[in-house]
Length: 304
Image 1: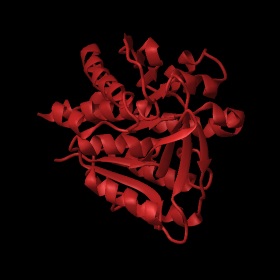
Image 2: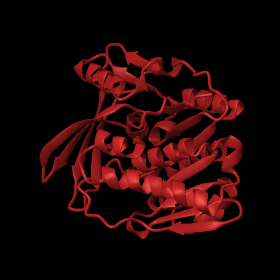
Image 3: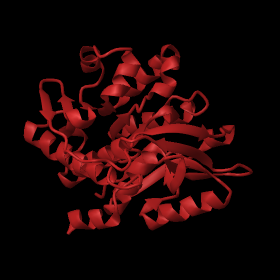
């Protein structure tokens, strides 16, 4: 049976600045970026989100269809504009954001997919913490849990929300306990736990934990073992889609290696190595351009 990767998250237009000058405008959003990379790999994908009923919304919807992402679960946000993010890159290619968003109660009425066992659901970022959107997120995740879906959660909890941590920590904890795999950066977990002593707490929360540490590589902690895998040395153009592309690469490796829900809990070091290396290759590719997702040429080179 063909497996489908579902994502739920925000859909925005990223306008990217370098040296205070606009460089590119890209369809974006943390989960959205990963879905584009997966769609370009030929994976069956479907995205749950909202989009404005403006010109930018139509451009993004067309872009999704061109990249093999089903729009069946998209909500057209009547009378509203598509959300925008301004991303200002520093000399290292890291971004500082300014967001221009609206939220509407209409979006909590989105359709719940008919999940099948061993499908994959990707969710995360502030979208999964927003109190207005929380009922929808919970309905989707709970339906996925009941169906035996691999749930991949990326908290993507950045400094801009660190001042809200006491309020948001219970929701973050709930998301992580519902997940099959949790992947975050060391910065995410330091913000969540207000320091670098987070590993022991995370071991009790997430049975399969991936911590990405930029040039310091990737740590994996499952219920019995700890593994470390090195990063690749590059000079990044932009790191905007780095973590999102890592997520896509890892999910693609799950599918390619036919790893289902019952298998994730018993991965060998070799299996972790294969999947992390695939994820790192996706992330490395994206860091070398202003795109938020892997190029079609890169995708084609992997599936030949």
